[in-house]
Image (tube, rainbow, N blue to C red; front, side):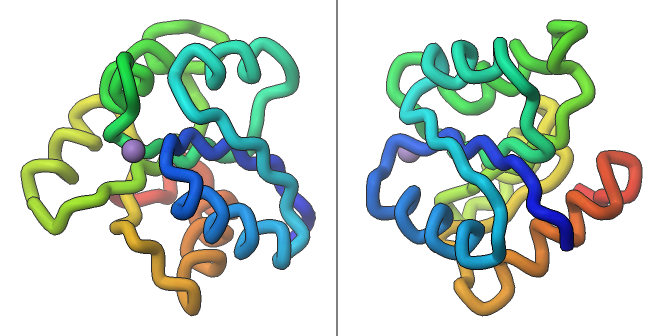
Length: 130
Ligand code: MN
């Protein structure tokens, strides 16, 4: 697939490293924000094709950041995929409720992760099933 721009919002350096490695190996460009404020600053420039959103962030959570993005016209239609750390079903439902289009469970599966998110970027928001 053509190179895409991805914004990863993740405060855990080790998790971020793996996701960045996998996506860059596939030719995509990844920027990392470690907290909500940093993500918002990055989103004032060129908008990414995909936001990967950790939900457990310091200060402003990924849920609240997602709600904030959905309520602002400039970012309302971005493709946002949650990275859910827990195998708790409530976590995933909460992510979708907050406005995420889909979720991927952490730790990400190195074998399938890139194909999954590329598929989501290809199909776009309407084609992604939560
Ligand atoms: Mn986190």
